[in-house]
Image (spheres, rainbow, N blue to C red):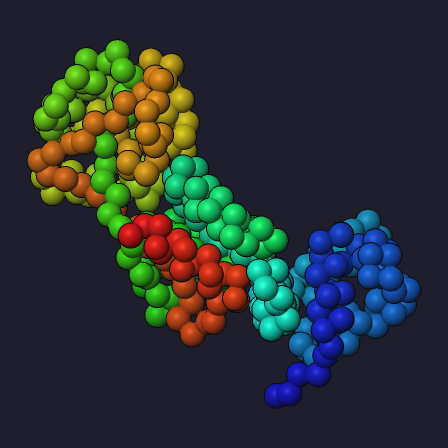
Length: 297
């Protein structure tokens, strides 16, 4: 089947979705409403299915429209990025990098790399989708983002996982906590501690408890939260200590918190880049991926 549509049809589709209606989208694109409607109908005719559900009060995407949206965004961004790359003058690189990232990496590590990248390519923009491990994989698979920074790979044969580094689980506690002075902390010492942990549905929690179970170690969880950053806030407040990936802890000296390595055994998670197997990154995303990999090394 040969599809017949124009680039402006795709831009019209995204404008209606983003602005929530035909009137605002028409004004944004400088089109009359009848002209915009013809653009949408042409695209729907080419796809062979309606893309919007229309009512007197709102316009929402159909199931086909929701599936098409990330693909259209990706297509337009790749085209713009490639054309801008061909027309670059000196260091005037432009474009946008769309990535997914697990929150723990987005909170402490990613900002440093983005800052370094921005110093070299100040006109390239970022869209960072900070999600849990499974949602991160889904964003990559659907084409919503170009690649993801994640703690697990996937069984999906269309995705690839490139390991970058091991991120060990550590203890985070206040500097006045009894364990803060321990030099050879073991998991057995933590079995009697009341700890703050993340939800059992978390990929980090599943990974940690699977490893502990294999070594006949059982920890006591005083409190469970959805986000590791929340657990650090509770630790700072003096409610207990927390076991979490080192990447999720403050880097460098912190006025209140200290992190301690845990031995016997060392338990870690693998951080890596998730990509679609046969997809080609935009020039901007490829540059950022290269810097990201170099930063981990």
